[in-house]
Image (cartoon, rainbow, N blue to C red; front, top):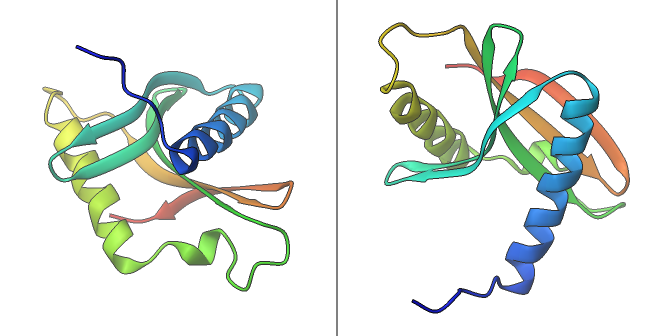
Length: 119
């Protein structure tokens, strides 16, 4: 099988996910999985924060963009993230405490929005 090349957009997305991951790791979170994909959606980062499992959506917008990174998350994306998280959680016999956070990057400014998407 031939290695797949990432598109320019995918490479940029990966770079911003790396920025988000480094930011969260500096705050004590531990990476469990990156780029979890299933038939229901995808989750950029899955981390552990103490006993809690944290699903993270990473959004980035250029400085001065008309819509902020956080505001760019629409209802359809929220549904896909929730469904993917629910699918991921099916592997557990007992559900751990969990939440869905957003890392919003506007220009070079990083905002960590804890529990930004409620299930």
